[in-house]
Each structure stands twice: as structure tokens, then as C-alpha cells.
Length: 527
Image 1 (cartoon, helix red, strand yellow):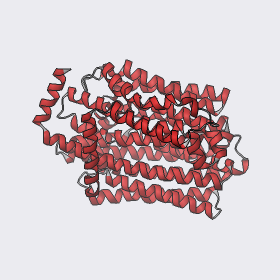
Image 2: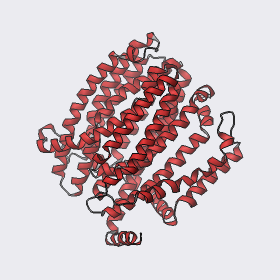
Image 3: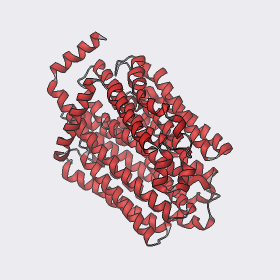
Image 4: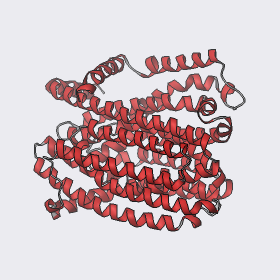
């Protein structure tokens, strides 16, 4: 342990300016990601509440399924955006923008094929709507089919345009694509609310969303032309050898992407097929869960290009120590955002979508928060091995989680309805984390050196201290008929924060976080 600490401190003294530069860049990018989280969370807070109060449950369920089917187009990314940002980051760090452009162009060629596949997929899903959702009211089929095609086609176009945002991610200039995303979410919410307020049909809602997707997709192209055109993107610049390299990298990433489809992308569709009446309630439960995942992604996503650049000049010991610190922070963040949803979930849902929705939803919410918190424990590790080209070592883990999650969700849904889908997610999460620690980490020592026991103890067990106040008060909040009174709620919140500040974070961690907060406040406006 002392040798490791000495090595890190020696290297830190040799490269203080580089360390500060990397830290400032990551700070700016995390700030941009937090803006993204704020925008998406605001939409996720306002829009479902409005729709739940202004649409019948059956119609709201149909709209959720339209968005879910359209979103399947995004899974055709198959790791292409990640590949572009990774290679652009690497070659830009080496001051070789020409080669970075060859990789971006290769990614553009692959993404164009993905967009065409998206159009075909959309046709197929729209055609199969009555078979997929046989218990949906028949009078909704026509409008649902039209909306699926409109949303799916527009997302196929946006998928191709996302190549231009991937270049900005590789250049670690997060503020540009994140600003465009904020515009997209704001316009999406405003257009849907306007259509519902004017008593428009579901097909009109689909048209409004499609227009927003096409416009904001075009904004990505315009931003690239003005700010990053030195990274050339053109089909005429595609190099066959680079194309093969990109395809090989993306083939491994695609396993992860398809795994994510099985883990998080099919839940609502499975509920709609087996238990349509619960679709609206289950979808409400997924939104706060998504908020927790977005918070984690705001920390993890900037690690991708940063880790790619760091791996070119940092030792494997430094990379391992960096993983421990980021995992501890991520786990702490998971608990601080997830515990309020578990402890006060019924009350939060009642204020948000009303007591009727809350009564049906809270049981799904607790299970989904727990499941996604478990599977996100290894999110920093997954991001770092992906960024350093070692994601192949996690192939077995990704496949195993996907198979367990999908098969158990289908089986349990056929037996128990929507609650079975949520329980299937828990089983898949446990498999994922267990296999990462038992198998995957054994094969990534050339990328980062760290004791698995130390990572688990420092990165997972130590942050769990913040759950102590919740466990102590469990008898007082477990049932929706029981609630913490205001005084106990304040005491619980203060106790949880005290456990986090003094029980999880060291003095150095606290100073680092304060420094990070100052750097974000200073760097965000100038970015």
C-alpha cells in the first residue's frame, strides 16, 4: 500500500500541470453533464405529471409505448458514438486531427447504415402494434401506428446526426452537445403539452415530437461546421482499414448496447404485452429511476474520453487508484439520490402524479431503484475499460446479465405481471456486479491495477454507511400508510448527510470536492 501511494505521489509531483488540466476538463464536462441531467429531470418531472392529469390512463399508456418503440432506434447506435469519441480523444491528444477525422468519417458511414436500419425497424414495429399490444383499446391502433413511424423516422435521422455530437465529446467539449440536448428536451415538452392542451390526437403529438427531433438533429450538424470542422466528417474520407478498426471496436460495444436493450429497453414493452393496464404506472416508476441513472452518467460519461487520453500517459497503478476514488464517489451519489426515492417514494409520487398513481407505482419504484443502484456500482469500471479498449473482457458479463434479465422478466411477467419484470431486473443486476468482480476484473490488469477486495471495500462497502439512518427508521416508512413526520424526515436527511460527509469521505476527499465545486462554478460560464 505504501509503495503504491509513493508511486502516485511521485508521479503527481512530476506532472502537476497535467493533473490540473485533466481535472479542470473533467470538471467542465461533469458540469455540462449535470446541466443535461437538470434539463431531462425537469422534463421528466413536469411532463408526466401534466399528462397523467390530462390523459386517460389507457391513452397515456399508449403514448409511453410509442416513445418506447421509437427509442429502440437509438439502440442501433451499437457503440458507434462511443467509438468516435474514443478515437477522436486519443488522436486529438496526439495532435493528429487528420487521423481523428478518418475515424469520425468511418463512424459516420457505420451510423448511416444504422439510420437506414432504424427506418426498417420502425416500419416493422408499427406494423406489429396490434400483435404486440393485443389488450390495447382497438381505437388507438391507427394513431399509435402513425406516431410510431413519425417518431421512429425522426430518431433515425437524429441517430445519424449524433455523429457530429460524438466529435465534440471526443474533443471533451461537452457544453455544445449538451446545450443542443437541453433545447431538444425543452421543445419536446413544450410541443407535447401544447398538443394535449389543444386536445390534439396522439398522431399530432407524434408529429410535433418528430419535428423537434429533426430540427435539433440539424443543429448538431450546424454546430460541427462552425466549431469542429477541423475534424473532417465525409464518406469520401472513409479509409477501409480504419473502417474495419471501427467496426471491430463497435462489434464489442454492440454486445453491451444489445445487453442494455435487454436490461432496460424492453421492460415497458414486456409490461405492455403482459399487463397493459399497469403500463402507465410502471412507466412512472421508471422515471425517478432514470433520474438516478442520469446523475451517475453525468459523472461516468466524461470518464470515457478522459480515460482514453489519460491511458496514454498514466501508469496502470494510477488508473487503478483513480477507479477506486470514482467508484466511491459514484456509490455515494447512488445512495444519496436513491435512498430518498425508497424512503419517501410514496409521498414524492403523491405530490408528483397524485395518490392514485402513487398507490399503484411505489412498489415498482422501490424495486427498480434498488436494481439499478446495484447494477450501477460497476459503471465507472465499465466506462474506463471501454475507454481503454478492454471492453471485450466484459463480454461474458454483459451477455449473462442480458440473458438472466430478459428471461427472468419474461417468465416472471407471465406469472405475476408487471412486478415480475421489476424482479427480473434485480436478478440481472446481481449477476452483472458479481461477474464483474469475480471474472472481468481478473482480465483487465494491463489497463488498471487494483485489488478487487480493496475496490469492493473502499468503493462499495464504505459508502453504504449512509444507509444506516434509513435502516434504523425502516419500520416507520416501509408501508405507504406510514410516513415519517416532518421532524423525523429532517433528522433522517441530516443524519444521512452527516454519515456521507464524515463517514464516507476523507479529509482529502472533502477538500477535493470543495475544489471541484469551485472549479465548476468558475469554468462553466467560460466553457
